[in-house]
Length: 593
Ligand code: PEP
Ligand code: MG
Image 1 (cartoon, rainbow, N blue to C red):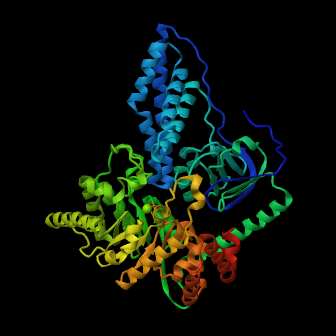
Image 2 (image 1 turned 90 degrees about the vertical axis):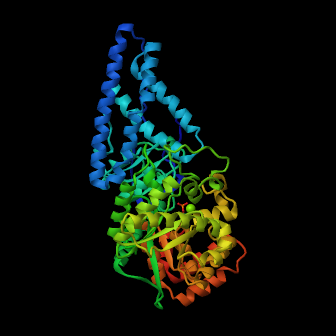
């Protein structure tokens, strides 16, 4: 039941920022209507025609999905289009189809009623699944389930494409197909009750550059069509029926943000040098080959983290060596002469594949993950490495291993790499013999023994997303303890300093590719600690570049030194913001709280 609230009252909600930008406009509530099929008894004679109706609805649904897949592949690239292959898999799930048919025969009820029951059962099982990947599949099943029900009940499809007025879309959840159908011109932004930072919907919002806030929990309870709303995708805030003061303030902020975006994009062709000439690399992180366009359009100098595991997700089979090779090669060729750092498979933790029979674990982030998984499955690891090595012949490619905990693991991974190199040589398949091989530093033991690792690795890339969770013992996906997840914690800063110092002592470059690299308030500190490369989501590249270009390295070094004297993360953060306000005031005004 909807709560009855005074809808004219201003309401402010905080959610998860999914795509940056500020939108102000009227609410369009989307897709909350649920199709609840009525229950009807059928006779024995009707059974076959009901089954036929079901098969027809499946066929029609398949046709619709194929059409969307094609449209998205053309407009956004095949990698995004492939999300809909996952929908086709749901449709082709013979267990599901069989269950509907046999229940229908047994219960003698109309097919839409039976189908809705079966789908509900699937959903309740999945919603209890512990890992995020399986829970993410709920949106695929809901999406397909709704389509089939609509086709069974003969209802018209509501599409975001048909929006005739510029609006801010509010929904309980948005499926990837809804999101993909959004027109940037008409959808000013969107906000949802559920969803996380890593959902396909959030990834797509960033690619489409539509401001978005997800995980608001109750926004659909408190808005009505036509309400005025402010959506701040930078801070994850939504204000419903804002008062005049808020409205004026955000109108100004939107203007400033747009101006800043424009100005920042102009930095695209400029190098990331400090005022006193120290050269820094600001690169982009990608999950899918299609993200390369955004890396280029935001002026990133290469790719500092290519999360290859996304290639293995959303599909029933494992990708072949050839398929991987073609994808990695295309990325490398589009980015050259700049460098692409390909991170080998980081499965496990919160990223699981349905096609692999991975047992459930009590502590998946501390379990059979990343390099540990690869070393235990040389069949998968070797074909992955072959594809990466082969792509190295076509541009500037570096390779790195995730979750390295010490020198033994690094050496073991290199042994497999050597075996694969040997095979390729024998088969006369070209690859870069000098391919640089790095270690991600994201486990405290690797940070502490980084002096040893630096003697054998060609470079380091600090993975702060994990380094923070492991060193502060704060699960990175647990909302309840999110307040403890502090990138500026003195322990984290000291570990980062240790890794950079040990890298430099051994003459290897050190980059950072966790979310912290895109936190503009910490750029000066990281710069001053001596970081050589920042790699972040492409959207954040221009602002990081701007900060680097606005300071002297000598000043940043002093700032970093002072930052290390504080005893709490909060103090460091306050100090960092103060310095940013002082040295790069236009950025500070827009991008930090
Ligand atoms: C990290 O841990 O900082 C990192 C970049 O890897 P991921 O977020 O993919 O675990
Ligand atoms: Mg990591």
